[in-house]
Length: 395
Image (cartoon, rainbow, N blue to C red; front, side, top):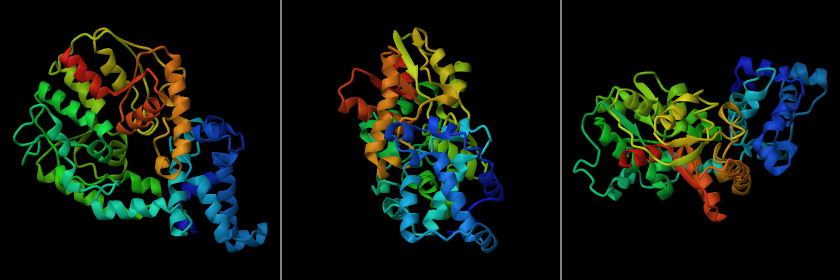
């Protein structure tokens, strides 16, 4: 392990922890597993001990021995059982940037060869197939064939004003493919000149970042930027908050980028999108990467509020305090059981609102919550906000 994986700020922040335990109190993994070793406070304490064992001066001062390979492996198992939801960071009274620290820690563990084997699978899949699921990348836009009347160009144009960056989950999972199917209909209704990148779209890199593979991002970023430039597009729209956050924080700012809720709000406000009334009571789940990650809480609520007849009932935990669905941080690949337990807590809160439908703005949240609802035969409808808007167009 090496200090070089951390910024100076992160190293200094390690010592800012006051042991207040607020990070543990709000952690969805700790609540679901009842395992304190999954908490931020435990992780920080272990990381401080490791840091002190690495430095010659500190090692002599504190009398610390470097952890063995087996100890590092055990530590990594707690580090990767985390959704990277950022609620610990949101609640930290010391202002420690915990989510950023966890990403650096995962990179450190990769460099130390102390990480879950699924990380190798993520690296190999993205390197070989340009998507995290190892599907044929030429099939990224095959969902278009499921439209009732697909256009001849299949939404793959030589030039367009807007690129719709679909994302790996929505491109390949049937449950999530309903989102691009709905968005293409919404864009057509609003007269948006958009194109897909199809096979020229590669994974945005977010799964690599979350796996501790930050070193592997450069080629993906360069390729995707070039692919958008080739379309002559000025704007890129994402229905996936993780793709949006990745472009917002790690890509060059060469284009106007929008999460789809922001873009839909513009279309509604300009009068390009006319919405009919729906008789529906919904609650809204703030995706972690859109809410705490990108600080976007208002655009989705404005879109919902623009639909006549729709009543929004907020959950007790909403906005920056929203409970994670369990689908982030590659947790589903690392510990699917824990991911399911976190989803249970989320759905329990949803049902407590009395709403007929839970609306979110993330393909992974839709997939995670829907999987739990279907397995447990619950009478709750889970949909993306794009699907809600399509319903309002159709009336």
